[in-house]
Length: 183
Image (cartoon, rainbow, N blue to C red; front, side, top):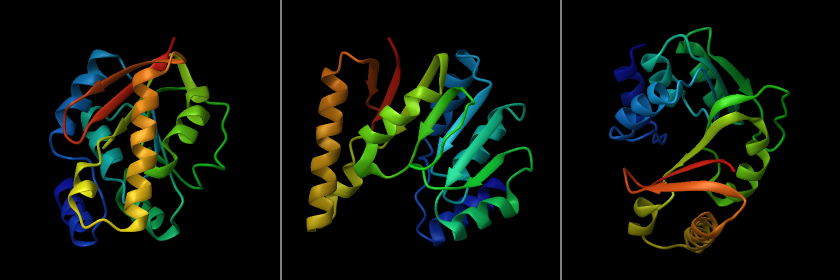
């Protein structure tokens, strides 16, 4: 399956994927920061991992996904050298360290995921979280669950803007991108 076929499948199945304008961002970021290892938290169908692989097929990519059906779909077409794990993001543990961790998991638990996964960064590594503005969700009819999600997300963005624990850069591209690294 080609990356375009994968993208069409994700759209058909209503699976969130990284936005088109994020691909050049990741390409520049990966190349300019000499990224050689990536951990993706939230594989879905594997579109992001496929994009990373297309940037540099020598990258060491590990991607974790809780949903077994999504995991199986990703496993069915992604290159075999991308390590796919069917595990909950909150249960994952490793002794490995990564140059880049892309957190694309549950938006309501961003701070918990950040505090867990920062421990898996190499000394000069980065965490990237996209869609931190949640503009698409804010445009939809508001339900209690969406209101709670937006509230938790806004609290997380406020934390990122004021924290002294980490270095943080928030970019106004796509639906907002946070780049986080250790002090």
